[in-house]
Image (tube, rainbow, N blue to C red; front, side):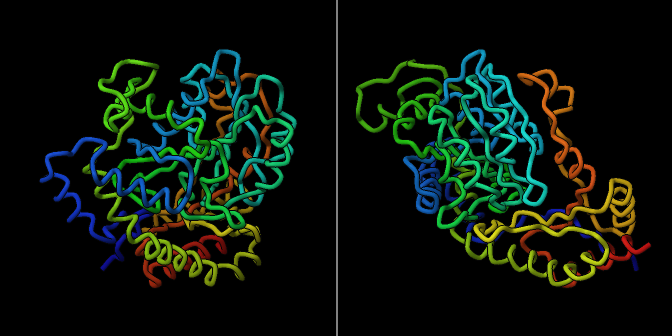
Length: 381
């Protein structure tokens, strides 16, 4: 009998998700802004801090909302890593900004502060920091670059990093604004969802107006005005309370989820560290200052041909290993919307060699061993 396929990702129920969803549906308030939205937002704010948490339909919409909060104008530019998902850049392009693609560090795959410093000019309004795999990179180096540029906002893309930390700081607390994802492939899930964390209290009032379709509806709901009206640009960003109920069920058991993911990560390290070192394969690098979120487990193989062959052989054995981002700086859209061309050689290199292993909350030790066996067998052939 053929062995069952080991899927790359398997979303799972971990707490009281179904109970809460049923309660939300019976409550008569299933749209955004209900009690579950409030409770889920409170948990996130308790963990991250900040002036406010706005639950959104996705991390993409949270990034779009952050671009609105920054009030970007034609001629403004935003520095974005080339090694990230397309919407990290697209959100700012939609607001009329141009992007400058920066390269990443070869070990953590986070933005390279030296390249960010080279790209800085008077048009730059923001730098986006992506915590790849939930691992904080050279945050100190990036902060040093931004120290002399107080007008440049730091925006964190924490899609991979909920409940990870850099030194004593939660990921998501470092920037003026930060965005989270609760997509089914992430650590904490509700099918589709996200959040914008507003860390600067001066941004909060306008953020809520933008969130409420350009109106001061929130002030009305809180009894601050006797009616609400159109005030600004905005859109419909709110997460339904039904999905917020699912999200709350996950957030309540976040420590259990994170412990499961840490176990999978550590199991892979135990199985692979020694043989991969002998085979010239790099495992995830975690700096001393970083306490990772354990979002994924990636390897850097010796070259593109080896990566592609190993991935194909693993899939043939029923193990869903996969690649990751295609560089944005030399994509058709990247060339179209960039303020000017940039060179990102590390991004080009690692994108061609990176392999992600199956990784989810309930991957068993036996499955991890089978993944490792398939990987090492393919590498040695």
